[in-house]
Length: 137
Figure 1 (cartoon, one colour):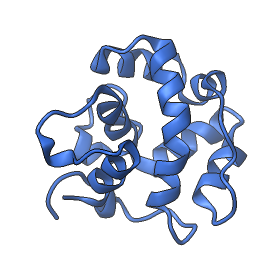
Figure 2 (spheres, rainbow, N blue to C red):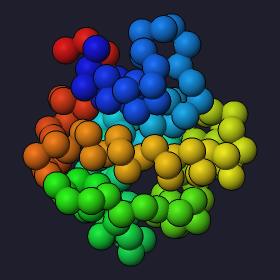
Figure 3 (cartoon, rainbow, N blue to C red):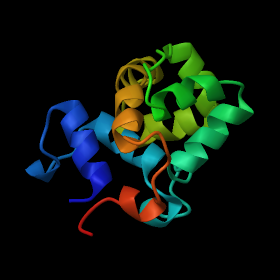
Figure 4 (spheres, rainbow, N blue to C red):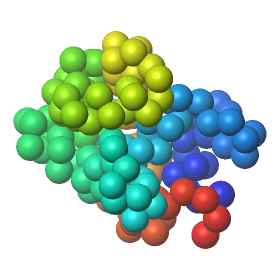
């Protein structure tokens, strides 16, 4: 299992090897996997943590995500702020991929995403993309 699989599985309290990925796991994988792992044309793919950070930066929410990456306390994010950070197209793509209504998707991601990003950045730095690729290493 790759680091991303392990961290998301731990955050969701499930084993990623169970065969069936939950809708929120699929959304997290789409957001956090590098474009190479997700497929460059896959809707919802922002290009890994770096791409997600860029998206937050462009939408004025960089400080929130930097708190998740840093070693201090994670700032919360509301579903509305997450929607602002991701943009309508990404939210639409993720909702379509997962089958979750927008409100449910954003509510679940706003609760889980800070902890997942925090666990993926234990030293307060973005890992290299190969560490975020799903599957065997």
